Every structure is written in structure tokens, then in C-alpha cells.
Image (tube, rainbow, N blue to C red; front, side, top):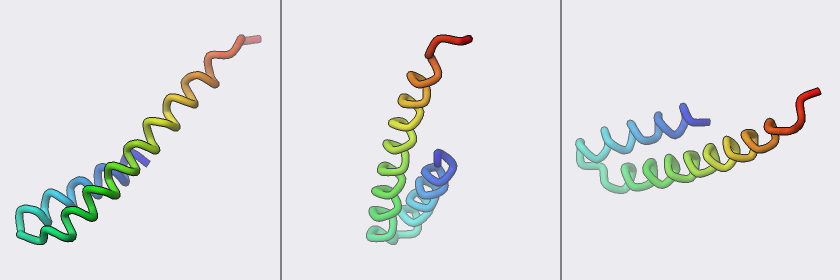
Length: 54
């Protein structure tokens, strides 16, 4: 999931450099959403894995 966020971020940067503002904004928004989802899932998996080891 983090790799998809990075890909959309790179697309946003390239589109911004080339002057495609609408595409850059959309790609940036998608990258932000994917990064937030990644962070939430990472925190949840971190706390789920801290259980008692048997």
C-alpha cells in the first residue's frame, strides 16, 4: 500500500512539473488517502502483534 502511495506521489510531482494541475491534485489526494490508510493499518498491526508470546 505504501508503494502505491509513493507511485501516486511521483505521478503528482511529474504532472505538476508538466503543468497538469488537475491531474496533480487528484494524484496527490489519492496518495494522501493511501498513506493515511497505510499508517492506520501499520499502527493496528503493531498493537495486535504486541500480545503475549506463548
